[in-house]
Length: 128
Image (cartoon, rainbow, N blue to C red; front, side):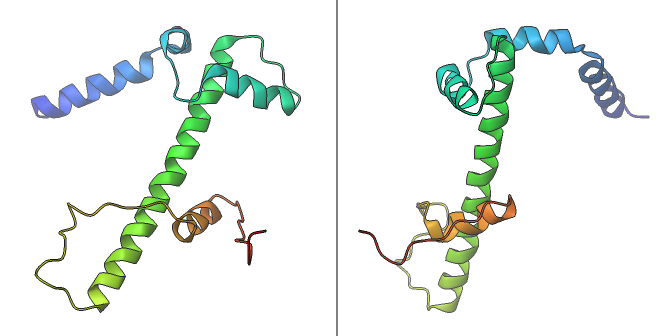
């Protein structure tokens, strides 16, 4: 077994061996992207009153991961859609490379990403 494989196994055992109490201690110092007040508000409106701030932060982290997964899936849909449209049309010399391209989050990309998570969104026919 090589040195790299042994180091990888040792690191895996370290991360697997960390008790849950260490993780909970790390949660006390972590500030999630979604503020605790926002998470607490939505939990209270759904009927749950969190007593422990670590539980509140854990739920905030889960919500942040959920939103991040949806945004990443929408970005992948946007990239696939733009690559399909650019490959079908003729490319010019002045066209931007894929590194310089800026993407915009649209409902056209967000709808299939949300559908993968079981959320159905229908765009209204018109706005009042």
